[in-house]
Image (tube, rainbow, N blue to C red; front, side, top):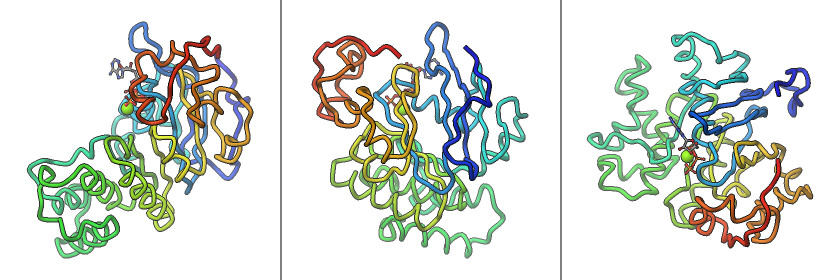
Length: 289
Ligand SMILES: Nc1ncnc2c1ncn2[C@@H]1O[C@H](COP(=O)(O)OP(=O)(O)OP(=O)(O)O)[C@@H](O)[C@H]1O
Ligand SMILES: [Mg+2]
């Protein structure tokens, strides 16, 4: 059912930087996102949490205009990107820095050239100016001593940090992270979480993080949403989420085996859950949403 946009709640009257209104997307028979509505507050860290395969990456691709919804609207910094011409979407996209799931570094370029890449591609800065920015960002993520190495010669955590430095070089208003912590050990996850918080404080950019790591969400997020079975179960401040007695949210955030989320939902994602949240499933009835 289509709702009137006036009915949608606004959590930040000061003006959200990203707004989704009733976003619905299906691939063939498979509805991946259904009526997803939320506002991302400016200059805060927002995280979207959900098991593997619930549409988190699909959601992120909608926000940068790489996928178009079947229904609903997406607004970025006051502009509606749904229905926008490609050249305008390209302009809006420059507000974003994106850290992709695997770092997405160019394998044949060393870390310096990878971090410098957006500056060479999108600005007319001199090599001297570029070097200053690259060194400043590399220092922030602790990579100054490794800039001559190729991505294949460094660890997964270093690749993520190089991806983070690269996402920041154009001083983006919005930084999107697709699972910054996947494939990292708990110590690196903790380190990366601290880095994300300090970089957000320093840059005052809006950070939007997609993850299934509940622990890191608790460390970094100001606002969070839980995506589950195509729906956004709830979107609110972390404090409100922690105070809620909604059984789905409480089970989700605590990673508890007992509760309304049952075996059915976990069937194809159990390994992820066990790995990230120590979930054991008990086959209780499905959540009706
Ligand atoms: N271009 C596409 N065409 C068809 N189906 C797609 C496409 N992109 C994603 N899907 C499907 O949409 C669903 C959600 O995918 P998505 O990548 O968003 O999951 P996710 O929540 O990011 O999972 P993970 O945590 O494993 O990264 C999956 O079932 C996937 O197969
Ligand atoms: Mg994904």
